[in-house]
Amino acid sequence: MATQKSPSIAVYPGSFDPITLGHLDIIRRAHRLFDRLVVAVANPLRKSPLIPLDHRVALIQEVVQPFPNVTVEKLEGLLVDFARAHRAVAIVRGLRAVSDFEYEFKMAWMNRRLCPEVETLFLIPSEEYAFLSSSLVKEIAFLGGDFESLVPPPVARALRTYVSQHKDPGETFHEPPESGL
Image 1 (cartoon, rainbow, N blue to C red):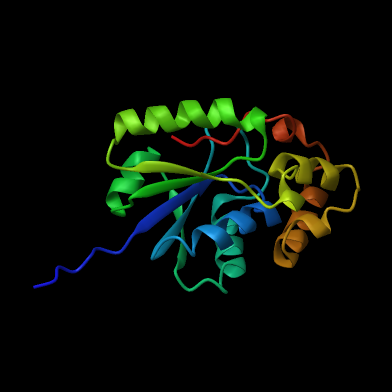
Image 2: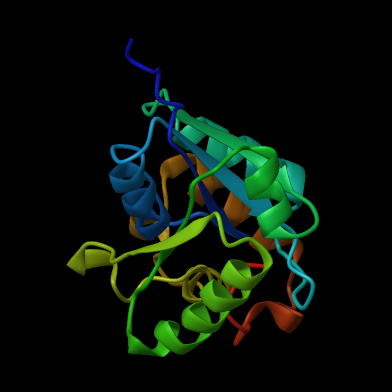
């Protein structure tokens, strides 16, 4: 008698402030690798997000509609606890450049130590998105540059609104990498 295999579930965590086309590139490729992909939206401890958490979740839900096996949820607490609660087999992370590697490598080792049953998989974005980060998008937006080709249209509209409400970007620039724990 054949045994039924459990669905493979992965978690893609980040602050996504804002979600960029680079993030969507990772989602598009990761959703094909797993039966279900959960985008886990975090409020980072060391940063003040420009877009409130609930609005980031709603924006991401809107832009991932073409991917029926992708869900979006708030991430509160440790990523490994979230992964366990969702019975995830993997944590998906994007690596843009060598500069991302050291931070991501440390996070992967710590997550493995805390939760050895969940693997970390690194996906490299398409070449056209290798330079792209949420921090750069916000900086371009605050300085009046053209950021609309870097984010999905609903996100561009929301970002314009939030930037117009915050004349002083404060801690928005030069942020540390997104927390993956």
